Image (cartoon, rainbow, N blue to C red):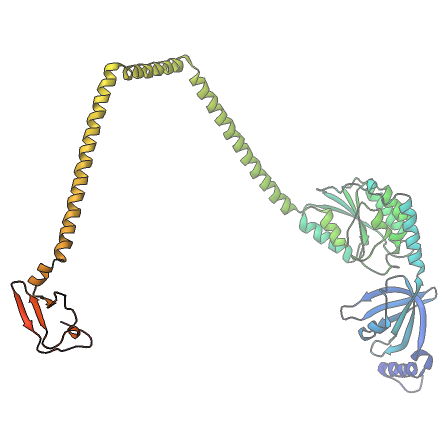
Length: 430
């Protein structure tokens, strides 16, 4: 072979250039059924368009969603996508980048799904009256799923964590492809015949096509005819299949199915300890109640005995004798004398106490009166001044030079003539 050798990047770059130069690929409208739909947390939407002849990868960037997508796109929707086919040079792949998505109608798979759902519902296969009770303490569980993958790992991990002694029997079924339906049906029938406490049928998430085996009527009938209680655990929480409607209980994920199927051994132990303590407390309470009732019966028996009756009668007789003595005339006279003597004594004590109080009040009044006596004030060095009309003089400003005044002392009296007057603004201060 001869000729120039190119790198992978050069080839991909050349192909990308061809796509950009092609007018048809720059503005194209493609019709197909939505599959492998992912609403990414970044805001971008990744999906595939398919028909009977092939599959085309597609995406819509977050910036285009507000103007280019006016409905909630779902798996199975038949849509028309307008956009540009672009090459991802690093990965060597191409993808339809959508600028607008219009809904045309429901896809074939979705139409089949709704038709079968309606048919089985009308037959009563979804009716709650046919749902079997999920056992609370299952110890032997059958699993119908693929032997590899996240589903069986999650179920085993959660089950062993909740109850280490759980017995798990796996039927390795095909869960995708042409032979998956027959494999799932055989798995359900085989484990149902083995006397399991509970069955779990399911798989991990995927597109509507990946999960389609669980939308087939033969799988639905196998679940409906199963004598063992059965939990359906297909896909993720948002995935819904016909198997979910027929099963006795639907789990949103395989790990959630394990949570529903296997009891928590630690919680059971704790619950048993709590119930044992409550039972012991209740038994002790009842025992104490019976003991109290027995003591009460014994007391009543003792009260009703002849000896106790004799003691009661003797007590009543002594009481009657005492009341008879109290009611005798001589006894009543004696009691009245004692009561008169006690009353006289109380009266004398009360009079003495009141007399003493009056004496104390009189002494206080004498002290106060003595403190207000003019004579006592004069004896302390003070004097009393009157003008010639006999009026008490308190203000020197009311006298004139030459006025006659009378001055009373502790001993004696003075008659005087005012020869000078001195007034102090603030009054006299000794």
